[in-house]
Figure: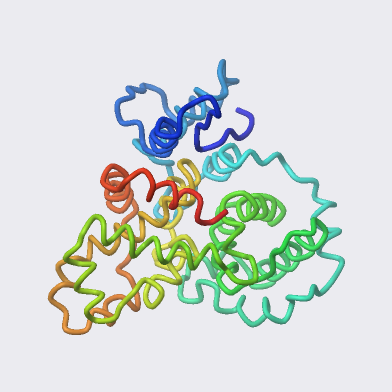
Length: 322
């Protein structure tokens, strides 16, 4: 199956209200579909309609999930991610050329972070070397400079790179997906001011206030805004919270339906901690490290939140990282 189509349907001929509704619906799991196919069967043959095949693939990811072992290993996952991102195989010599240019202007900042990348995760440390993280991030910095993008290495990009490096069959493959993902899904996260991240944090507060006024007010009474506790989860699209196999399942969903939905996944994690947060004298102790991810539970809660927030707020979630 070839390449990418947008996550959101948009037509200039539609009135604004309908555009918002269509956009919201396109970003939401279409639970009324009845599919008998499997992911492997779907991607093993040329599609009659690319748009319909991508819609089916996203739905199957949501309902069936991507088959993987207990360590998160999957023969299909990186191929599926490539389809969802529309990334064709990259020539190895293109990546090697970037690597051979040596240290970029961000090299020292990269080196200061890479040794901390999922440092306590034995699965990641066993498979991915620090040197590969350094090469990938440094090459990306050169690529951004060549394209004239207002982007620089920011803390947290190393953690965003981690799932790609773990899931990919090669460093070149990981780089090609990482580069497209950053440029398409969250360019606002890597601009010097990190404006997309700060917008996302404000949206965590706004969505929480909309769907659970009591929990929002409780956290506010303790002077706890998302800026204080959710920065890593927003910046890294929840990749900072173990275990890694659950991160990969969550990312299957985010790549299928849009990385912007991580904002709703962060709020979903807060709602899953609701009882503990409401009774805790010091909620920040609980929020310093979110509980281990359970991707299926979080995704189910996040999909439910789409229906509970106004279209105008959802539009802000969709656009915040651009």
